[in-house]
Length: 128
Image (cartoon, rainbow, N blue to C red; front, side, top):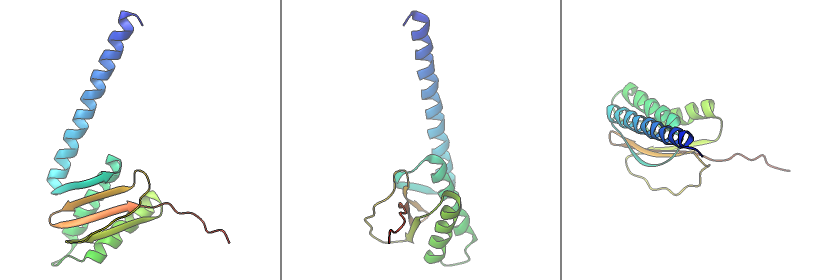
């Protein structure tokens, strides 16, 4: 490589790092506004943001006491219809879990004092 190509590559890397930093800052601002804390994650940012916003909207819409089953069902249905089957959702204030998930399909987060585990598994047809 000559000097011009090296300089172009250096600038490209610099711009990429700036973009990544900006995305990280935007993500932190969004989670702060929604009062979200990510506990564990293997999921693209766009899907995470969808889950955060959906959970926040559902919690804000619920009158009075938390309805864990209703929240879990609504999140599962939203992700099944948007991103295909088979999503699973566990919602509560205290639970343990150990799950196997598809690559890029796992999110465990808290919003207010509610913990939400959302994950996707592979669906394989049964051979008879």
